Length: 160
Image (cartoon, rainbow, N blue to C red; front, side, top):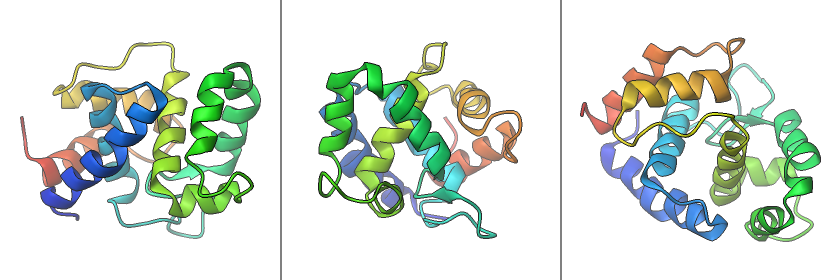
């Protein structure tokens, strides 16, 4: 489990600047992305355990990444351009970027949540964040649970 200091540094040095570069920064978005990374990878795993397809600290699958570009970012050129600007090079391999480039991975995770039909939960409402993550990121078919997200959050960030 990462330390609180590591999690706060990841939020402040990676997530928040990434969200600002996209014009999508808010306390709720930063909290949800940090919670997602804590639950999905513990801020450690860059490849899905068991040799699965998920990559990076947000554990996004390439199929999801590609779908976001084909069916969402394709119609939002300004946002698409902002996301691409976060790549280490314009022609960098997308799977490598998701795996190693935390800013790019954070941007893609935020774009994934942006596609959800409901507004982000209020910052500080860990249970609502957990339920939102489960419904829109992990999905009902995913192996994670709301309780696991809350445990991951509280184990690092403490209870509210």
